[in-house]
Length: 105
Image (cartoon, rainbow, N blue to C red; front, side, top):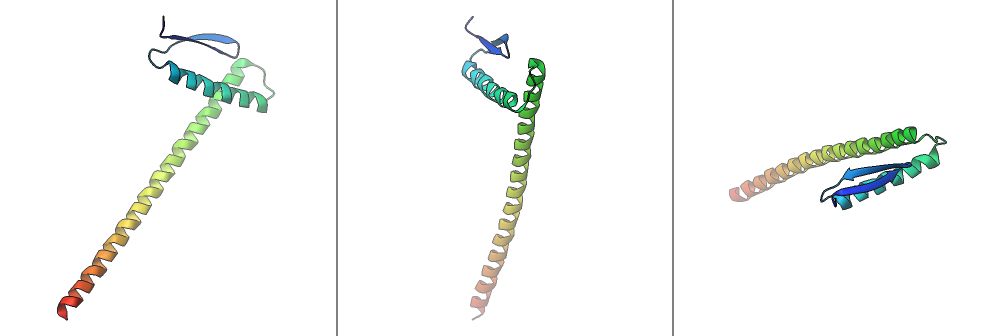
């Protein structure tokens, strides 16, 4: 069974059906283990279930913050785009006026 990946987290062995995504699953597990270790270093908690839940909340918090940052970035880009469009229209109007003035001369 090549598509099964064996992992161990907090003393619990798990078998994950990975298919062709073994490297991706390994990256996810590695990231989770890193975050789990950070949680263990910051918290006196020893209960594996509680550590796992707290770590999951921390990761979800990161995700929500990243999504919020992307939303703000998209909003900022939209505002900048609108300002550029206004500036471009203004320049076009100024060029048109200059060209009209030159035709009159």
